Image (cartoon, chains in turn brown, yellow, cyan, purple):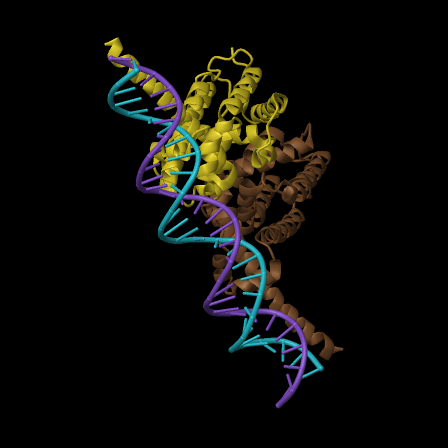
Length: 217
Length: 217
DNA sequence: GACGATTTGGACAAGTCTGTCTAAAAAACT
DNA sequence: AGTTTTTTAGACAGACTTGTCCAAATCGTC
């Protein structure tokens, strides 16, 4: 078996490596130059691959965009899921733990490279290829909001929070967390961890002033 | 005098009309297709003008982008300034008046066509032409935040609010107001006034739960 | 009706980009 | 070592853009 499987794996490894390299370069270039301005020769060069190879792997330029979006969406969803699992369901110090959670959320989902790429691609090409992003639209933020809302609802039930509408609260939490980062995100600046922590801290303080309750027994 | 001025005015009127028509069409096309994808023939057609006229007015394609950004930035700044003047400095019913203010702010500044254009152009071309948007960056949102913060500080002084940091509160207010509109804004959907009002209402309720005080005497 | 400025439509060269094709080279497999 | 698959480099046609040029047409004014 091994002699039959090993080559497949080897092929798959190099094949996949090139595939990822191309998707990576394509994401960078699409993001930097926009779809129309993206040059396939440049993508190939940045991927360290010949142009023909790009065409071999993904056919069309439009097809390449589809593949890029699919790839990034999957990575982001994984990151969101992973981070949501670290939500402080049974907190000791709710404020501190929410701040840490917010920092993780931003680092893993919004502020990393994938987040920046997806956000920009959405803005740039979202209207032109609505069907491309329709999936993300429903499975991405909507799912995130719902999951976060469920966590907040639980905290409300166990007496930590006083909420009317957990869905609204979840959206507001995310909005507050990004309040101080708007400019940096729009301009694609890199955000230092200190900025991230300050932003999260401000956000959580406001959130808990609005919805917090004294620590339950 | 009139015989000397009248023709100038008439010329200026038609000249200005065409100029605005071109800038308008250019904004639409740049926004839809990105800088690289924007076609000058298309801009001319949408402006109802010949291509040569576009070149007569603005010379270069890059120059045209500069003119578009300048024009839109000015319009937006005017809208922000005008709306800020309607801030409820001496409220009777603070919650209701803040909601109305938030709705106006979104209608006049964030959610109208100019706001959408500028936001998208910034995302698309902000990194490529940083000097182009540097002015906006400092004079736009920074000024808005500061002005709004000053209004909130006044409300705190007169006993309506309990604030640590008016600047943070101002950013949070704006973030909250947009919390429910994120998706629509990213995808360029049109936002109904009802959505706007609900969003503003949720935002103000949260904001006042965090920072509000019982009505002062 | 004549004049001056602006606008128009179309032609044009120069450049860029996509997507295909080829034959040669490299890599992987048996 | 021999075979098969993938990759490469380069040439190529076709299409599309930008920016310029020019002669004809249009417009508002005198």
